[in-house]
Amino acid sequence: MTYNTTIESAAPEGAIYYLFGATGDLARRKLFPALFSLYKEGKLSENFAVVGLARRPRTNEQFRSDLYDSINEFCRYKVEDLTMWNAFAEHFVYMSLDINDVEGFKQLNKLSDELDEQFNIPGNRLFYLALAPSLFGPVSFNMRDGGMLESKGWHRLVIEKPFGYDLESAQQLNEQLCQVFKEEEIFRIDHYLGKEMVQNIQVLRFSNSFFEPLWNNKHIANVQITLSETVGVEERGGYYDKSGALRDMGQNHMLQMLAMIAMEPPSRLIGEDIRDEKVKVMRSLRSYSSSDDVRANVIRGQYSAGKFGDKALPGYREEESVDAESTTETYFAAKVFVDNFRWAGVPFYIRTGKRLPVKTTEVVIEFKSVADNILFGSRHDLAPNLLVIRVNPMEGIYIKLNAKKPGSDTDIQTVNMEFCQSCQVGINTPEAYERLIHDAARGDSTYFTRWDEVAHAWSFVDRIAQAWRESTSDLQFYPAGTWGPKSAEELLAADGFHWWPVNGQEEDNVIWVTNSR
Image (cartoon, rainbow, N blue to C red):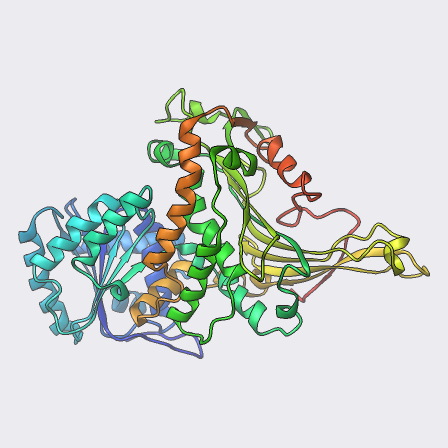
């Protein structure tokens, strides 16, 4: 029995969910809690099963115990009803699998047939590969050769980033996958596309008549996208030292958010039409023409020793599993142009980094200022109007306006009008992985990246990476706990702009008008 705690239930067809890497951190922190939340809200079919797959031995009882601990630690819902819990947990089974052995996949296929019969599942299969990208191809081949794709239902493959290391490796990986799965069966997950306020960008733009007419180079001065982290590389030093901020965050999260801001209205609100418009943005990104062009428009930095509050923080080169002479960037900022009719001449400034002062993801749309030789512009230093979209950890929007100061005749003050999504919904706001797993099970690919999106993003990023390989002279260091290299500020100052405060760090003289909390 499925316990539905919401008014609206949108359950997909019954399916078996295969979690490769079921004993890993992603499954424990994100995937198990997502499945439980979907179940609790009636968004899983009653006819489902979950098969956990990893090399280490586990019994079903041990697997379900791990599942219980994961949900109580990381899920927005806790286990409060043991009857409901038992009804949920009985759908989970575990199988130890050597992913390089096709015989193991044949045994998995037999188990799948048994689960189809036990839970009345119509042969649908969703394979979630929480594995290293180098294993995507071999696992897909073994699924095919082991008979896993011969069931009568649909088959879908969900894969995590990174999708390759550069365009060449991504192409090789894609060619392997396309030998087994069709493009429409491959769901490349970028969890930022599952976040509430990223998905809300389209609604804000296309359902409000006072935004869309202004959404162009006639009215917008610049766009700023910030994705900052307070943490260092933690236990990921070995991986991160081969990746860096550009590949880890830039090629996927940053460019995806840029595409959502810059895309044209789709002709239809269906996945392929929306992704078509995102691809047009990727194609319109102005490529850097030379290494000098990269150095003039892209800043790379690496954190050195510093402080966060009273806590001393080590430098990146002092982190575990990091090369003591590493030139890997932990920060980058860039000025990007979208060369199309709507955005010609408008700079998009993007920045991301580790060991920064605040954890936040925000998009700032800065509108052009009132002309300084007319009306109030001739008497006051007017602040530009802003539309700020807060993605994480705060969720919401605010608009910065100029208004008359009460009790005066002409004095002007800045007023912020705020809507806080997460303040209203609180801890029970749906998580990104819940939305994306639910979408994949329903076959909705809207918020997954298509191959041509991935290819254009890598093509853009590879030009930067190539310039960085030619010389390390532009690598700059910033103390941990600060906002990155000084040159990132100079990048905007050269155009007469500055980075706006993020995550509520607004100026002291701003008056706030907020929604009810």
